[in-house]
Image 1 (cartoon, one colour):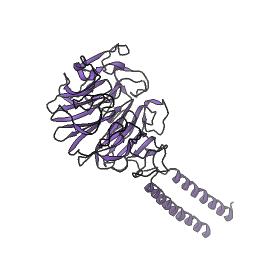
Image 2: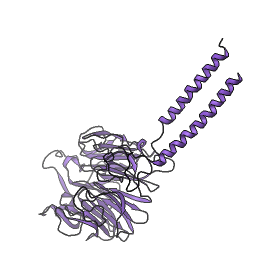
Image 3: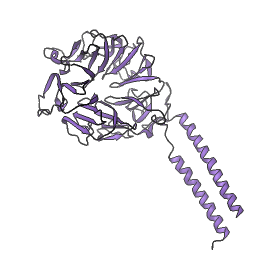
Image 4: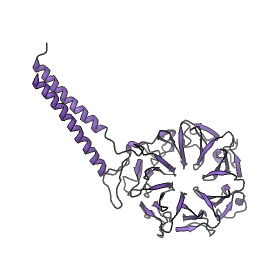
Length: 470
């Protein structure tokens, strides 16, 4: 039989190792910050650009990840924060109701109708009236209000220009005008830009605006779709006789009827009809029109000046375009994609281009977005997944590498999220590629350690009392 001394030794050692195990396990599982989808917080919107991604929460906060070399993720630019591989909260802004991600800048629309921007300003994309110097030094990593805009109800962003829709149906643009994307009927060309919002000369009574990489569109209340910008097939038959690669004069796209929403790629566009069908037009290179063309790898590729129906797609509720691909969300929660897939942006597990819609292996999806060489989908559990290019950490899974891409949907890693990033003007030495350290986070972890120690002391005291009693 074991004597009492042996039992006491065993209990003491067991208590010690149990205490160490509990402490280590608790510390090892400390969160790097509260996730935005915890509790009653959920996603309201998301927007994907060619290099970074924005997500809007229902509490009015904005989160970002990807390339931050121009401050487009909304934090101070250092060597350690030029690439953000996991979501971080954009500092100094809240009460946001809409977002848009441009090539290297970002836009937020607040509930009070004001517009806020941050990131690259080489071509006046920020719209703050500061003359751009066409150098990388013109970066504004913290949200700044765009003066002169009020009563705004929608915003969107192209590669190097921005759009805003006022409640009275007028449209304002600013930024690069080399492709005529500002729609001001002025001569467009290299180094042509406007650093403060100007009114678009043409469409009135606008109800929705859309920005592509180099083109812009406005859908009016009478159902007409106006387009301007780069002189590609997107502009319709007006492109035939153009002598310039830019068109700053808005014109109506023929064949657009009963449109619910519109999306624009580099050389293709699409609109969703109220009956749930999808119609595409533009250049069919890489199969972007989704018409099953046998020439989609040929040169010259097929094209269409007017919208054609994408066969096999019904009951569609949302569409988004990337640089050379399109995705569509069906009312049953399935996602369908077609077009360029050289970076796995369609998320079908391959890098094969698709000239007609194929089903992407995600389910119960309630929200989608696409941009550049990436696709994003969110399911009804609030889980975000992305596929495609990950050179700058666009997938938000904690990794990045030059030329890295993933052709299967990857879950955005919210283990990297932190709340309350640095305030304007600060330079955090604790910043890293996964997120930003936070004083509030430190306090929370200290409180958790204190609570853990109290539990350990109580358990230990009980064991010691039992041993002495024996």
